[in-house]
Amino acid sequence: MTIGHHVVGRMTAGSDPAPDATAPDTTAPQDPGAGSVPAAPGPIDFLLDGFAAVPDAEALVWRGVSHTYGFLADRVGDMGRRLDEALLPPAAVVSLEADFSPNAVALLLALIRRRCVVVPLSSAVAGDRDAFRAVAEVEWIIELGGDDDTVVVTPTGRAASHDLLATLRGRRHPGLVLFSSGSTGASKAAVHDLVPLLDKFRVPKRTLRTVAFLLFDHIGGVNTLLYTLSNGGCVITVSDRTPDAVCAAIARHRAELLPTSPTFLNLLLAGEAHTRHDLTTLRTITYGTEPMSENTLRRVHAVLPDVKLQQTYGLSELGILRSQSRGPDSLWVRIGGEGYELRVVDGLLEIKARAAILGYLNAPSPVTADGWFRTGDAVEVDGEWIKILGRRSEIVNVGGEKVYPAEVEGVVLEMPGVAEAAVHAERNAITGQLVALRVRLHDPEPVADFRRRLTAYCRERLARFKIPQKVTIVDGPLHSERFKVMRGRSASE
Image 1 (cartoon, helix red, strand yellow):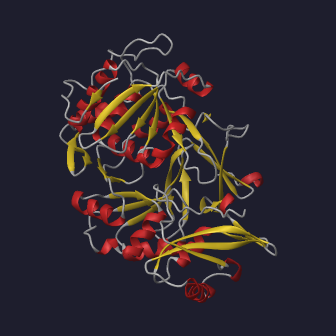
Image 2 (cartoon, helix red, strand yellow):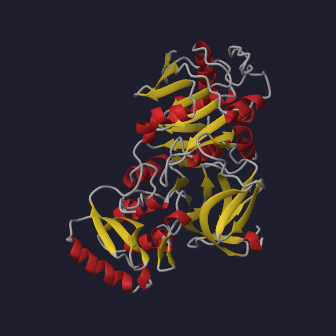
């Protein structure tokens, strides 16, 4: 690692399965502009070969019902034929509007097999779908829903023309468009070439029963799905992502791996859901998507001492990097692996990745002239280990002293009665900025009383300049549907 510059139709889950889902799909309609699907090799042939090797193994649990790899392979073939019937051409730009389900997974694979550009949109972005379709120049819409996993395929009449989409068609490669959460501005549409993104799943790893906690349109959700299926594991879907529902799914379906976020773990601790369910099969919790506080990590390790806690690092623009935590209660992590290079420039992490995005559809390229992606994450470095401190854009600058929100939130969340906490900066005439706190409590409490309690608690645990100077008690959740803290800045800024 270099250290800086100091170096249309309807189909349901009950449709007839395909007799031979692993055979090459040569029946797709011809499209002179985009090319047809070749007989072989295909971008997901290695996955389908794996499915064929374990046809009776459990591949997916959806709404409590188990589906085998044989079923999923059949479903991929069936979805391919249905797309033919709908006259959806190879290399089309397709929004796949779904959450995890058998047909959603099969359609994702069938579209990749067809070398389409897939734009997954989960229910979490329902209000933004029209805008996202327009940005991605979506040519076909596939919507899923209902108890029978019904699928509706509709052409939009639009013809995609963006240079990045043309690049994928020129390469005859499938693509993936992922929208950022938009927490620091408008959502950006990141365009991936799926061929290098799929490459890392060709090397066999551990077979695991994994909870699909991260969303279908999140890079972590895509990574969870492809990792689990490429290694003959079982994807356990959850429609309710509250701590009790997730813990119940772990117990019922013997889950071994839970990929999640620090916010979810804070909610689990606050509600003590882990005490009401048998989590003895759980072996590993991976956490990412936002910074973890040392206090939260220590508390999770204390209540789940037999579970390995592993920090991950990934971005919509880069995929998920391999990682190794220094210890079970340490925030120091080693990330990278084959295909990734790291450097730190002015305290910010930059990454060069073989599987990096081609660019954004609606923003300038985030890659430097020499090929490095600027993550915007502030880090500390200790040899080959790094500690993710948080987004530079979220740092609170109090008279020149830096305050990282996750650290303050971690302390506040230890206080009795606190359910959620979110820290952000507000302007101050004397210090430039001050630390502002929004907090959700389990039980009502006058804000003056809570402020006195907060100040007394933090005085022994935080430097004076880190103690929140403005406190707002809120009734609603302080996390997004992606289980990330909504730190939002005040209207006065």
